[in-house]
Each structure stands twice: as structure tokens, then as C-alpha cells.
Length: 278
Image (cartoon, rainbow, N blue to C red):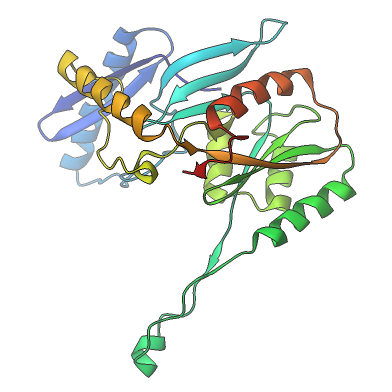
């Protein structure tokens, strides 16, 4: 798993760069300064770097605050809870496999209105039962596998319960492809060398539109503003669940490390609560 503890921002004129270090804040500050100077030099020479604005960055670590770390009986780190850029808590697991499956929309061609003066038909969402049958058929052909299956707001979440694997392994790639995992999720897992599962609801789905100040906070005032936002977020999300447990499929055995992950996951997500999903 790749979650550097130290982050620093350097800015010169209109240019800003964040960089990270697992060793020290001083090293992160030095790297950030080097990066912003290199960026300025590239712009002056006419070499414009590609834009990365507006989303996750699969080619670099996540700038997320580490909230808790968990080790197994052998002293190995098996899970980390972080806070993501929009304020949600996320469970990151070293080898307990989560699979994120979105229910894809099939959109009709956009020329209906142009040709016939009628609005385009609404997108067709892939049926949930169709995806569940696909999972059950694959598991029937791979009987050593077991899954806990959860419903999310946008699709399904699977947790492999029978054993462990590396997120950047060929086996993980094969399983992702066979079950139709979200492509961006696959890239994030490979880049971060871990699997991810959001534990708490998305703020805007609970009615909280205002964005939080992002960690690391640049000053005490911004940290205080975040704390105020976080209090409001906890209040708004109290009556929502992140996912709902549906069923167990396949091998009923649960690996000890997965059992520990299961406890970290099902409580915060309110998976057994029957609350509305966010």
C-alpha cells in the first residue's frame, strides 16, 4: 500500500505543485520545490505538460490522511483507513480483495431529437439480476472462491472471503475482467497496490454540497473549517448506509485476515441496517 505520511506544497507565481515523502516533511518540501521549478521551466520552453485536473491520479499516491492502521497476528499491515479528498473514510486492504462493479448505462444515440424532434430515450441500466447471475456462474466454475456481495448506490461491491491476493497480480486482473469491475477502480488498485472500499456515504448524496478543506491543511483556520464541515457531515450522513449486504456466494470458508477486514467494513458502512444508500 502506498500512502506517504508527509506532503508539502510549493508555489511560485501561478504554479503550484504537491509532492510527498515517506521519510520526512523536509524531503517532501524539497521535492515540491523541485517540481514547481521544473514545471515553470517546461512552460517557459513551450513544453506544456498534460492536464491532470478533475479526478483521481492513478500514476501517483493518494493525498489522503491516514486515520488508522491495522496489523495481523504476524505484525503485518493488512488494512489502512484513510480520508479521501471529498471527506469520506475509505478502507484500503493490502490483500483482501474488493471488486467494484458499476451497473452500466446504455445510452441511446443522440440524434433522436435532431431527426424527429423528440427527446432521446432514457439510458437503459444493466439489470442487477443479470450481474448477480454472472457472479454466481463464475463462482460455480471457480468453486474455491467465496464472495460477500453488497449493493451500492451505483452497483455492486464484492469482498473475496476465501483467501488473499495482491492487487497488482495477474490473477486480480483476470478476476476484475471476468466480473466486469469498474476500469478506473482497476487502475487505482494496481497503482496503489491495494484494494479500496468507501466506508462512509458521499456527502452530496446526503444533502451536503459544500466541499471540505483538503488535507494537509495549510493553516489552523482551514483545519478548523474542515472540523466544522466534518461535524456537519456526520450529522447529515447519520441516517444513510454506504452499502447493503445481499448474500454470500460460493465457498463459505472465511480467511482470518478477511474476517478482520469484514469487521472493519460492515460496521461503518451500516451494511446490515437497511438504510437508504448513499
